[in-house]
Structure formats: C-alpha cells, structure tokens
Amino acid sequence: MSTPEQVMVSAAFASKYSEASAAIKNARAAVAHLSGSQKTALTNRLDAADVTRVKAARIIDVVKVGTDLNTKVAALQEDISAQTLNDDTVTAFNAVSTAIGTVERSTGKVAGSPAREAVNTKYVTPAKIAKETIIFEVSRYNLQKQIDADLTANKLTDVEANFAKLDRLEVRAADIKAAGNKLYPGKYPTLDKIEAQLKANKQKLWDAYQAKLTPMVTGVSAINAKQIVVKFSAAVDAKTLKAADTSDVIKLVAGDKAENPGTVTQELSADGKTLTIKAGTGFFKGDYTVKVPFEIVKGVNGQFAAPVNQKVTVNDTTAPLVSSAKATVKASTEKIKTVTLTFDEDVTSIDNVKIDGVNYTTPDVVGNQVTIAVPDLDATKTYNVTVINAQDAAGNVKEEQVAPLSVSVDNVAPTITSVSSVGENQVKVTFNKELSAKPAISGKVGTYTANVVSDITVNPDNAKEYVVTLDKSYLFKNGNSDTVALTVAKDTIADALGNTNAADIVSIRFQRCNCSKCS
Image (tube, helix red, strand yellow):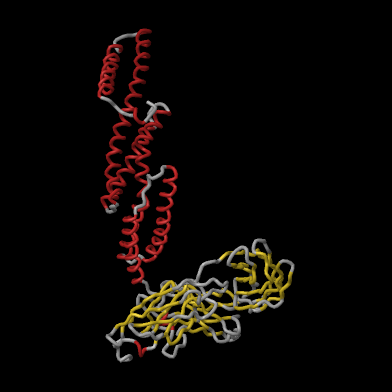
C-alpha cells in the first residue's frame, strides 16, 4: 500500500483477515497442548503470522477512523461552501479536529513510511485543509461570544484585551489562506460572507463596549519641551473640550518655578483618545498640573470623564533628531528643487545643512520641519544630508547628524475626494493632496447661470480641505432643498510639483434648516 487509492479495505480483504485471525487463534489453542522444541518452533511461526495479522489490523483500523473523518469533514465542508458560521459549525469544526488526531494516532501504527504517507494524503491532508480554511473564523466567532459574555459581566479589562486578540486573529485568517493557496492552489477559499458577518458583529460589540466606558485619564506625560500629552481610556467628544467662550476646559497650571510656556493650544487626536497640549512662544520646564473638571468633559458615548488633577514634571534634555530627509519630484528625469527634513520634535534653529558638498545656512524652519531650497539636484543619484547644530526650544543641541535623502516620484493629479454639507449654504470640499493655491471652484443651482460660490476658505488645520460658501439668495427658491453642482475646470488647480487636475464636477444636495436660529 503506497498510494492513496490503495488505502481501502475490500470485502475480500476483510474476509481473509477474519479467516486468518480465526486460524491463528485455533492454531495457538492446538499448540498449547504440545511441548518441547516442536511447540517452540510452531509458536514462533504463529508469532510471525500474527505480526502480519496485526499489520492488516492497523490498516483496517485506520480506514475505519479515516472514513469517520471523511464524514465529519463533509459536514464541515457543507458549512464552508455555504459560508455558514454558527454554533453547529463550531461543533462540526471541533469534531473534525478531534477526528484528525484520532487518524494521526492510528496512522502512526501503520507499517511502512509509504503506507503512512498514503493514509495521510487520503484522509489527513484534505481534513487539515478544511480545518485551516475556517480555523480563525471559528476562533473569532468563539472569542466574540466570550467578549459578549464579558460585556454582560462588565469585565471591561478582559474585553479590551480580547479586542486586541481579535485584531490579530483577523490578520492570521488572511495569512493562512494566502500561505495555504501557495501549497495547494485554490483549496483555501476566501470566506467573504463569513468575514462580513464577523466584522458586523465585532462592530456591534465594539459599540457596546464604548457605550460602557467612562473616559478616564490614563496618563499624562511630556513628549518634549513643547508638548504634553494626556491619554484617555476612551474617545472624548471634542465639542466638550471648549467652554462657551471657546476657552479650553482642561487646564494646565504651572508650578511656582515652572517656565512660562506662553499661550498653550490643545489638539485632540483623530481617535479622540490623546489630547496634546502645545507650548506657545515659550516651552515647558518644571512642574505642571493637568486639571480635568468635574462633569464637563464627555466621551463620545455621552459619559462624563472622571475629574483629575495630575502632575507632570518636564525636563527635556534630549536633542532633536532627524526622522527623515525627503524630496519629491514629478518624474525621475526632473531635478530636485526642495529637500524637507522632519525632526522628532520642534526645532528652533539650525546652523547649517550640507547636501552634495554645498552648505545651506538659511533653511526655513517651521515646527518640526525644515525646508531647504536646492539648486537642481539629480533625482537619480543618492545623497546624504548633514545637519549641524539642530536646537530645540529647551536649548538642547545635536551637533552633527547625517540622514540619507529619500527621493519619491509623485505624478498624481489633484482631485476632489469628497464633498459634504457643513451648513445651510456651506460645503466642505476635500482634495487628495494639498494644493499650491486656493482652488477655483464654481457652482450652479437649478436654471441659474450665475456662479453661486461666494467664498472659498482653506481649513487651517487641514490644508486638503476647503469650505465653499454659497450665495443664499440663489438657494431654496422652489422648496426646502436644492442640488448644487460644483465644478473645477481642467488644469485650474495644481499641487506643489505642478501636477494639474482633470475636470471635476460634483453635486451635493442641501436641506433648508427650519430651526429658530435660521428661521
């Protein structure tokens, strides 16, 4: 037996096995009445025959458990093909896992490496492919049930840890299929329907988790002399961080001997969990206290953040380091005209930057970025950028550091990626990249031929976004809603490299506001 096709027990084989077993048993009974050398010789011959019988028995055993495994795999495969994932699927999966172990143990007792390989090829390999196809989907299903139970029991620490585990299992679900299809092309299908089911349930659980969280300050730390970060356990509602007079409700109080940082500003991260407090014209040094007031700041789930008075000591002794040196061109045949250095913190001054043997003593320093105008460097060559005496706000100086210049090609045209209404007569227009100048956007409504755009303003916090204001006198002439067509003519906008746009026409529908303020 050396091929999968030969792994079987025919009726004739089973019959002969039974005959041989009975014959050996009868012969042993007869030999038992003998003695001396004759008994020894016959016993030895029976022992040899029994070895052959046991080999046959092992084959019968493995075919029996292998057939049982095939039945269980077929049941699991039905769910895989139908993309069904429920408790019955988990039961079928567990049955296959157990049966694989049983077959592998039985296979280990089969005589001969070729025979064992044939058994594995016939039974174990297809079963493992079926198991691996859905293993991480089953794991995620089970873990989501555990998360649901933990939410009910308010074990929120366990819930947080299991969500992180869930993210890892999602990656492994994709990885095992990619690896499996390299070995067995087409055998590991993508389970799109199951994937959608799991992701939808994950989002439902995540929303339930977020609704239970009371935002708490989990840490206050100084990043450097210009930035202090406040970490929250849950996302904070940005609107609750400002008082009616637009002042910050979370206060930073300086200690007696602390440096005056100037007028500080605050910035909430996109996920709402990190508040960065930035120094103004001065810098942070010494002791400061972050004060979160009682029942003012809220999480996005509506829960009040717990009040806190947390002290942080700032003593920045680390000099600024270059994180990257980059240049971008429209094509590799074009010349590099600008080099941008990014540091790990804001820098106040740089004495000198050397590139390709040329020293530049007047770089443009803004925050943590430094821009150097260069005289047409060859984009196909490699360069090292040497930075001399980079200094931060606290006076820390890095005397010399070298970074390789990374050159990338950007020939992507600027284009509108989204439009959304932000008021009764205002639209937020978002581009895929920053523009070199304010875009020329025109707008028309209904049968009017006039351009209804009255103003265009860039978002100071995001240079890719513009607020387009429309002339109200053209709106809502025939009801409480209007559709406005916004147009950007071809080649009328450009990015910093000179890439220009194709024609863009987008439409957006406005709804009249009937609140007391607008009536």
